[in-house]
Structure formats: structure tokens, C-alpha cells
Image (tube, rainbow, N blue to C red; front, top):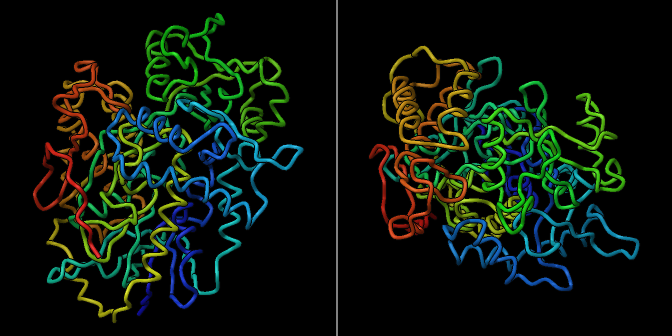
Length: 525
């Protein structure tokens, strides 16, 4: 029997920060769906936002975060995380030399969309995520075991105590393994792969969120999907992210004729909040016009952005021509498993951190480079809490009664069909007609009633995609306004009277329901 103190599902920056910070006398296990370096965090080109500049202050960073989030944020959460950011950067700088500095040894601070100051700390130019992940992997202690190619798919529950006590996982060859633990942490990221255009790693398909939903955890704010404005776009396919830092260094969005598209749209022009830029690009693309990043103002582009330069060159883009073809794509989920800042969910023994969680930090639209910051902060805070938590004996409960009885196998759609329909009907621009079509299509599969044990690794992923897609679609249909990453052309304006700081919450045992008031997360300890 495999029995750990802490079981972490996922291997991104939040997961690894937690594992590194936990006491060395704890038995810690990390389960990863694929290899340890396939998390979204490893791909992160952007940096970490922190008010460390001489003319900057956390108060400015807080205002930027709230404005980008269209004031749907939890103000207390924003203050705690943003005020802690400079200290996090200083602490990490003392333990490793992976942040970019100038000739005087000072941190190089970049500018990104919707920020009022240069405050983005980078590592390796456009390889911040990789640099930080490698640092954290090198810092793991002997008490941490890594189990790769283990797809966690069902939380094991003790219904008498409403407590999670482990997970079922399946290997690529179909072997089911039971992992028991006193504390189970979901750090599986968001759900970018639900869309045909995405910057996300192939592993990021909403697994942890669907799994938590099936276990009756509260899921919140799923309508808020951030579409990054600039993914490399070649022959109808996206090939990877072109970081916002490129626009921060002076690149502008232009038509094939070289006409700037963000003039007069927003005071920050090409560095407007991401939802505004994405919606503008989408308008041009729908009218048959191609959009490009004009990078001619950036000196030494290849030196400043080595990873992006390699990506472009590998896909046949001549950087000397000064233009990169782009399109928006799914990038970040502002919603997720409802938690407090420590990561505690509405179920005892179950925690969620990183993009899989929803703390209220990001509101309706995440400010650039606040995601790695959140992951580092949450991982550290949860580690402190677990290190000080009273140890209790762990008695595994029978796994065959963990969840209600499910039905036999059903015919599932192809993954590409899920992606294409989500992009078309629940993508950058939404409306009631398309949302109702998508809800009806998703309803036919009754994915939340499927017994997962007989399914293959890829088919379980499909089931989770269908469940997560339904959560997004239902929430988008319920919210009759536009706010941040949720834009409806039949309700194109914000409606503060009805919706300001109101959240839509899903819970499995009650079906998908709407709660008109923002509810503080009950603390499950």
C-alpha cells in the first residue's frame, strides 16, 4: 500500500514550490500525467510581476491587478499576494542566480500589458518558467518521490467524514494504482487544451478541476478564460506563444498593409489588457485579414528573445523581415477549484494551488505575469500550513464506495471536435445561441455520470474535457454581461448592478447552480 503524508498531483511551479518548502520529515509524492517537465510552467516565457523598481510600489501593482481583473477580484487576496511579491523575488535571488540583470547587477525589469510600471522579472530572456522549474527541481529533497506517467483520475473519499484520503491513478498501459495520503493537493493547471488554439502544454485539459468537481468540491468563475493575443500562427495552426514582453519591448500589431490596429482602441494601445487586444485581433481575423507583430523596433531580437526566435525560425519565419503572424488562443483560466489563499477547498484533506485553483486574485482577467507569482506564493503558504499542521494517523477508507455508482461506457467524441466546437461557440466572442448549442451538445454525453475505471488514459482525458467544457459553457450562459475574459456580443457591456463581484458556483451534488452572491470559501482543514 502506498501511503504518504502529502500527495501532489501536478509538477508546475506551485507544485514544486510546495514540495521544496515542505519539511524533510514528510513523505511527499508528486504524480505527473506525463514527464516532470511537461507542465505549463516550464513553457512560461513571461516573467514574475513584482514591484521592486525604484519608482514602483505594491499599491500601483494592486491597482493594475484590479483594473485588469475588472474589479471581480477578491481585494484582500490581491493585497496579500502583491505585497508579498517583492519579498519572494528577493528571497529567490538569494538562493539562485537565474533572474536577468544589467551590467550593474540590478534586476532587469520588463514591461507587459496593463502594467503601469516596468516590474516584470525574467530569467533567460524568455525562459523564466524553465529557469525557475529547473531551480526548484534541483532543490527537491530526498523525501520527495516523483511518479511520472501516472494519470490521477478519481479522488477517493470517506463519505462519513467528507474527507479525501487519496486518488486512483492509471498508467499509460492501463494499470490502476491507489495512492493514499493525509493531504491531497491538486496542482494540475488550467484547461487550455479545450480549445483548438492554445498556448498551453498538451497535458493541460482540465483534469484536476473535473476530478474535484466529481468529488463535490465547489468550482467557481469558469466563464473567465483568458485568450492570449499573440500565438504564432502558421497555415491555420498555432505553433507556440509569442510573449507579451515582445510588445513590451516595442512591437506593435499591424495588418498585412502595415496599419496599426490598436490605435484609438485603448490608451495603452498594444499593451492594453489581454481581453481587449484579443477581441480586436479577432475582429480582423473574422473579416479575413491577417494580423502580424511588427518587431522592427526591437534591437537584437534574437538575443532578447532566444526561445521565441528559435520557435519562429523552426517554423520558417524570417525574422529579418520584421513580422510575425499571430492569432489569439486560450492561455489561462481565471476560475477553478474554489480555495482560500492557502489552497484549502470545501472538502477536508483536499487542496488546490496554481491555475487549478481560484483564489480571487485574478478576477475576470489575469494581469500579465501574475500567474507564476501566484504559484510561488500559494506553494509557499500551503507548505507553511502543512508544516505546522497537527499530524494525524491516516486510515484508508474502502475505495469501492468513494463515489456514487456510475454508468457503463459511452461513445465519446474526438478530442479535436471538442476543441473546435469550444473555440467556435465558447471562445473569444460568445452569445446565447452558440452557448445553448454547445450546452445541448455536451449534455448528450452525460460525462459526469461515467464510471472511469474501464476507460483508457486518453478516453479519461476526453471525459474530463467534456466535464470542464460544460462547466465553462454553463457559466458563460448564466453570466448575462461582458467582463474581462468573458465577452458576449449579445450583452457587450459590463453590468455592475447585477454582476459586480458576483460569482457563479458549480457543485456536483446539486447539479450546476448559480449563486448570485460572492461567497467566501469555507475553510476545510
